[in-house]
Length: 193
Image 1 (cartoon, rainbow, N blue to C red):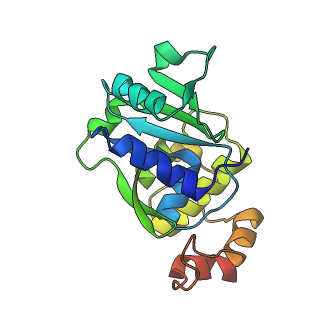
Image 2 (image 1 turned 90 degrees about the vertical axis):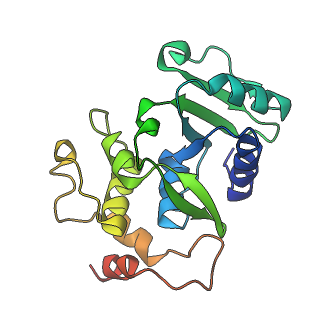
């Protein structure tokens, strides 16, 4: 099942009613920072501060979400996974990084401001893991759009080149939920490469 922006926004409203902080991460977090949808998403990844999973678990359960069983490493990693009544997959992970001053950013989904993980953390959390095509695309687009330096460990992949896929994507971008919005300059620069 593919997650849509409306489902993500409804999920965020449910979680924000708890008063506990959450930020969009990975796929939807990247899209929120960029202001448009770069690809289809099967689930929603969120991060929160340590000590909040139980409150978020209760909110999701009350909203009809069912906790996934047999999720490998969930207890050790301090993360939970749920499936919503509409089939939306949700993973929430605790991180002490969220306690840092200046953590997080504000992005946009469907014209609505949403909390998301900032570009520096989005890039940094990809260090040391096997990168997928989606990771490489996210790294390139976040670097190009925000100017955030690509961590040394992720180079040479990110030096001065932009992949064919990222250029092709830039040529087909329509801002998510705001079709009349002006095209950001960094997208125009990618289109010209």
